[in-house]
Image (tube, rainbow, N blue to C red; front, top):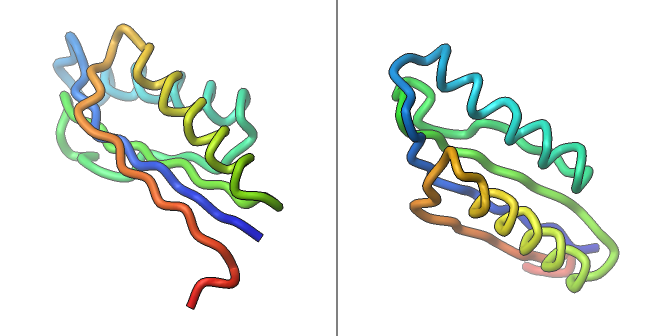
Length: 98
């Protein structure tokens, strides 16, 4: 069994309140969840209105599938015009790891 996660640090565009931030972040989370069938959540910078931390994770039978899904999620987030991708960190592991 393989597991992987990816975490993003995003700069939001023309956002001036936490309410406006939600209108940008929620559709991104929903699209990732729907398109890739993974667990995804806002994971950081929740008190800042122009920054967002997002994270997604999944478990699969083989590493190639986990890598493929994480690559797809990163491409989706990077292509969103309303956000600037500042950084992406990922981790891949196996149930056999010590």
